[in-house]
Image: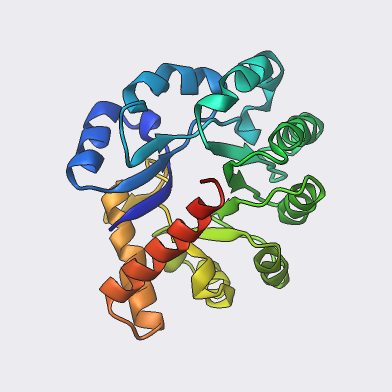
Length: 243
C-alpha cells in the first residue's frame, strides 16, 4: 500500500496519465491544488475515484491571486475533506506578500475550525507562525509537508498531534536526515511532491515514495513491508478523525 499525501498531479505535463497510473497501481494519493480555480478544473476527473482525492488549495506563493480566488475557496470547501496546499512562506521568494499570506491563512483556518478536514501545510521559514495559527484555530488534522524548519520545533508539532510527510529529496539531504531522525515513526507519512523533485535525473512520480519506505526500513531496522504497514496505519489514524 503506497501512500502519497502530497502530489501536484495537475502540474504534470500529462496529468491524465499520472492519474491512470496511480489508479492502476492502487496508490493512495492526496492531490494538491495551488488555487481554488485549479481545484474546480480538476474536480470532475477525481470525483469518482476512491483512492485519489483532490485537495482544495491556496498556495502562499500565489498570494497575489488570493483575494480574487477566496470566494471560490468558500464555494468549493464542502466538496472535499482535504485542504492543500495552504500555509505560509516567509522565504526570500515569499516574504514580500507576508501580510496577504497571513490574512488568507487566518481566514482559511477560521472557516475550517471545527470542521473535519485534513490540511497539507506549506511552512517554509514560517514554521513557528504556522504552528501558532493552527493551534489558535484548534485545527486537529494537519500534515507538515516537506518540513525544513528548526529541529526544536518538531516536538511541539508532534505534541499538537500533527504529522510530517517525507519525500525522496529529504532523505538525500543532511538537513532532511536530521529532521527525519527527530520525528517519531507514528507521526510519519510519505509524499512525492511531484513534479517538483527529480530522482535519478527524471521527474518524480507517486510510486517513487517507495524510496522513503526503504530509507525508513534501513534506519529503523525493519522490513520495507513493516514500514509500509506502519505508514498505512498512521494514515488510517489520521483519516479516523474526519470519518
